[in-house]
Length: 184
Ligand code: 5GP
Image (cartoon, rainbow, N blue to C red; front, side, top):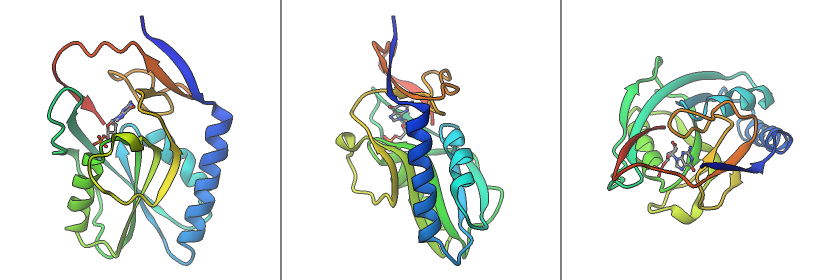
């Protein structure tokens, strides 16, 4: 049986996301940041975050999938839904739910840089630093988290739990086999 332990409450998340919004506001003063939400895990985070950014801004979405846990975790990202707008000459901020090995973001930042943004920064809600296998610069971090499987506030396990208003640790995971394709 799976068991959920609360890691951050709804109130703690809102407090931190508000602080992040204020940090981003200061960093982009005089600019119009273009926030790119990586679907689906970051959608709740993005929708709260933008309401704490006191600047004109635009948003776009990209959906990707990657192979994880139990596989080679090559970091090869498959674009399932590409951006609707060009990012050329824009101040792009990638908004991601969690950085784990860093392979997904490493691959994504390569794809983005090739499209010639004026500036490219990365904002993650959660940073599972202990698991990093590549050196990648993250500009804005919500919370540093332990090496546990986290669900809630947009993050899923097999598609479920995204609607939990808090962040929790899911114990006793049954991954059911050698490999699976996860939804990012
Ligand atoms: P990375 O390429 O950095 O290893 O993996 C990043 C992706 O793996 C995240 O966008 C997320 O989809 C997934 N992931 C990594 N750790 C967790 C976790 O603890 N919980 C959930 N729900 N997804 C995770």
